[in-house]
Image (cartoon, rainbow, N blue to C red):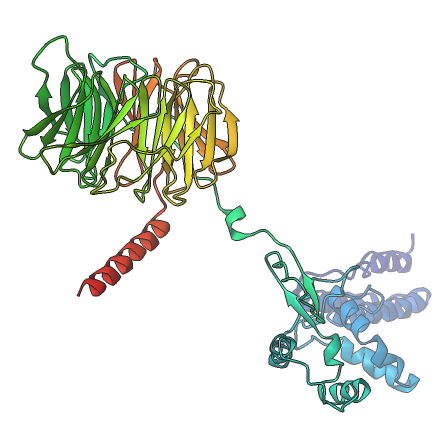
Length: 553
């Protein structure tokens, strides 16, 4: 190979074949080297002269392209933000002339001053969003006008025609006021009185009431406390438990009476029968909670001062054991195995003031109504009897029976008056009946009846939640809470191993105490109120007491 050809090959080997450089410094150094090599190989022969010119032209083009790397790439696809900006300005660009389109494209290549696409509203989907109406004061004023106008008497002398009224209404309000609609958002509409005509078009939307949204309260299935009751007589017809307004629980254990302070937890022995064969058959506190009446198997009623632990008197009038007692102010009523009910005025020496004879067998249920108007009695003869209030100074010592309810098929020991409806009485039957029945004592009609599938030994109303509580013997031996008046089951309280004989409510209406044949007393805290409701009730009680004090002054 000739020297000129070698020089050409050497030159080609030193030609620029790539335009990728790492930095400006490398580009400058490469340029200097190439220029030096160009000067070296320029002394070649005429054969390589044309090649030298072509290499120089290619070199200059490469250098020029290197220097233009920082310029925008014309053939590359548009950036995402540029596409968004161009799509938002499509309408504006379409109105420009062809001569101005180049300027627009150049300006679009600059960095935008604001975030592209910001402020653009999201297009609405099919169906749209929820509609929130705007109720102006004018609309509310029109509704108020319509409500007040409808009860005004129509003036017969009015000469303005309906067309004129419509015209003025459209002119002033923008619509015919007779076609205006009033929207009620909750609650069912009340029934209009007879003959009432409403010319308004009223729309109602029924929604859930706040009461239906309330959460159910928690009722514990286990007792809050368990007390031993040794030597308790397992007798269905006796009433051996009572809770005073001073929070003292009295229980009769065979021939002894014990007092348990629910606040302090102290236990005291109040009394003991003198003879071993006698036993306590019934207990009942006065309303104030300072005196306790004790019925015994030897046909006597004893009255005890609990604070001083002293027996005040012993009253004898019955011929059989006294299984149930009930107070109405200073009148103490007692029911015995003979079927008779005696009224005792504890203020006087001659205490026996009246005798009620309506039962043919043992009286085992006895309750005065909260207002003191009626006495309800239940017996082993399956009857419920209603008696009037004792008339002071009356010469008639035999009370007159108001009404006798005979739908039960078993002994009626369980009786309870509704504290918020004074004319409602609940009664429960024994093993052969097992039904809870509620009565309207004013009419004598049975309002509702429920088969509990178990012997009913005791009933009471829980006012905190307006519920009915029942105690059961054979076959369930439990306590059941029912919603009143629907008598739907709320909860079952299981735990006793024997039949439940009695139940009683605490003075704060939150706890129920049950005593059973398994010789235990169990306290169930099932009716605690939430703090907000409790505070509101306390405020009502305080306001009522302040009104009473003002009236006394």
